[in-house]
Image 1 (cartoon, rainbow, N blue to C red):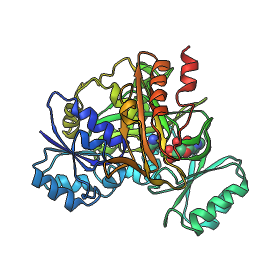
Image 2 (image 1 turned 30 degrees about the horizontal axis):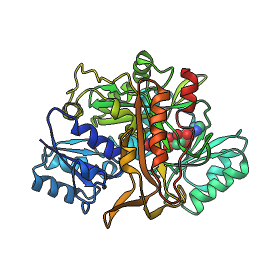
Image 3 (image 1 turned 135 degrees about the horizontal axis):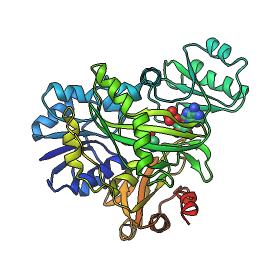
Image 4 (image 1 turned 180 degrees about the vertical axis):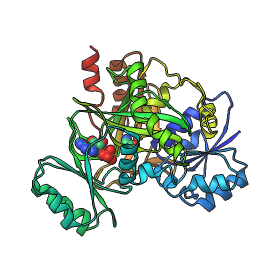
Amino acid sequence: MKILVLGGGGREHAIVKALARSVREPELFCAPGNPGIAAEASCLPDLDPTDTEAVVAVAREEGIDLVVIGPEAPLVAGVVDGLAAAGIRAFGPTEAAARLEGSKAFAKEAMAEAGVPTAGYRVVSAAEEARTELDGRSFPVVLKADGLAAGKGVLICFDREQADRAIELLFEEKRFGDTEVLIEDFLDGEELSLLAICDGERAIPLAPARDFKRIGDGDTGPNTGGMGSFSPVPGVGDETVQELSEKVHRPIVELMAARGTPFHGILYAGLMMTSDGPRVLEYNTRFGDPETQAVLPRLESDLVELFLEACEPGGLRDREVEFSDDWAVTVVLASAGYPESSSSGDVISGLEEAATGAEVVHAGTAAVDGEIVTAGGRVLNLTGLGPDVATARRRAYDAASVVEFDGKQMRNDIALAAVEEES
Ligand code: AMP
Ligand code: GLY
């Protein structure tokens, strides 16, 4: 069986590693891939994952049996629809179903119709309208660009001055293009990433994870794509996962089916666990990055089988997805300047030593003249596994400390609270 994975970051490296463990021994391809992925798959560095025609052509040429889409951009661009029209099986939602991630206003309407708990909101389409809406509001308040913004389109405003600045950024400077804006109630609590694999009819939850979004220790500084993660999450056992999934995945999957746009693929609910119960902050229609790097190493079920079943309407039937009792902690190493900018070409050392105690996952790396160098904001992910969270965390940080490159940044408190909670 030949499988093509689209994408080239840490999430895709983790997916490739998990696919490689399948009893089906698939022949793996990845576009564009990265130097870490190249150890396990044939990389196609010149194939643009959002170019449907090119993806279809390569899939035909190589005789690909299954295409797995990692990032959101190809989904929103309709790559799955193009592959389906060409008779090529693809794991991921169609363009219509991926609107759950592609438009926050669409997701909010779907949640209202399906009865999924979320923050109160208003959609505004011009600066003046936004200012009027903010008059008499209490703070903090959250402003969100409607479309895809790589995690950067969410502005949390603690007072009117910050909100006015956010309005300028969104409507006048058009930082995220021409977009409607959601003004949303601020929610307080701990966040939880709960992903489910969906076959168009039902959703089966995966192990829960926590993501660390801010660049700095103690959740300080600007938002990033994610600086670390761990799985499972203290206090969120199997029963809680099932209950949450019934509230936040099932109603949406049933709604999408009823609308004639069934959801196949990964439905990722970003949750805020408030004192009034769980609330959905957002849906993503793909694996999370870096949650996947902590969740998939714990997967005991065969990922190839899961993907194949999820592509068929109702194909997952009464499938249970099995995870080991191990803990996994993932630490992200980022390059100088991240998240405002990134640094390329810094030589990386210590990768072999790091791999003796942890999983080394490549994100933004490149191979130049026989050396591995930085090539992006988030550069590497080190995942430690262990029978308890303290051991997993120590293994991740031991590996993170032996990898060196100029300007290396990492958080020092990934899973620290979980260790304290468990002991
Ligand atoms: P989103 O892309 O909507 O998940 O937002 C990115 C991050 O912004 C979330 O992970 C939260 O940390 C934060 N956030 C989003 N919406 C809210 C909200 N209504 N209240 C508080 N924090 C929020
Ligand atoms: N870790 C957040 C995301 O993948 O969107």
